[in-house]
Length: 179
Ligand SMILES: O=P(O)(O)OC[C@H]1O[C@H](OP(=O)(O)OP(=O)(O)O)[C@H](O)[C@@H]1O
Ligand SMILES: Nc1nc2[nH]cnc2c(=O)[nH]1
Ligand SMILES: [Mg+2]
Image 1 (tube, rainbow, N blue to C red):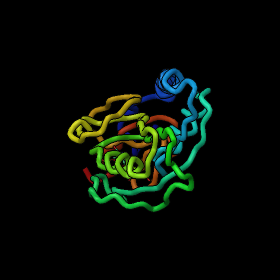
Image 2: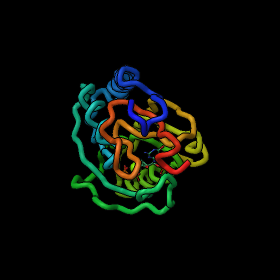
Image 3: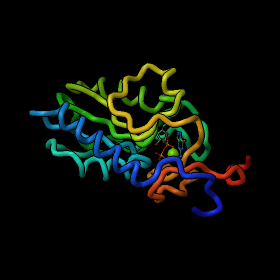
Image 4: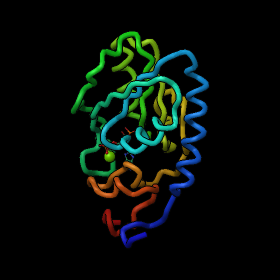
């Protein structure tokens, strides 16, 4: 597992099995419609790749890059658009794809931003959700796993841009972030 990681929280197999279930649910909900998957760079890349390949619903993909974290482990609360969508989302059924909802600040901001563009619907699919997300009024339709309030890495999630390529989700050893 390597000396920087404390423990594995979710194995590759657990993630794959849960994505199977979420995809089945999404396919059932979007029967007769086409969905626009909006991946939130950069963390959502793995979820987007693995979830989209499980869907049978006709879909398009687009990407937004927003950042509220910089290189630290706490949200700054300020959301910046680093890259906007290329697609006109007016009248579209949008499904935002995320790796994690922590404070919920990124998502609540993004949902109202997209609704403001006249979407037909905006739903959220996230692999992970932390307890603080409950404090923000954001309705999350598809949640992979509710996890404890620990800083996690892997499967798209970084610590100072490292560890995104791990195939599982794990927690960092305290010495890595100065604990
Ligand atoms: O619910 P919140 O507290 O707002 O946190 C969740 C967001 O934080 C992370 O992104 P980050 O801004 O670190 O950028 P990244 O995806 O490029 O790593 C993560 O990918 C989510 O987008
Ligand atoms: N890598 C990582 N990014 C986050 N952004 C918000 N919460 C987290 C987390 O637990 N891990
Ligand atoms: Mg990040």
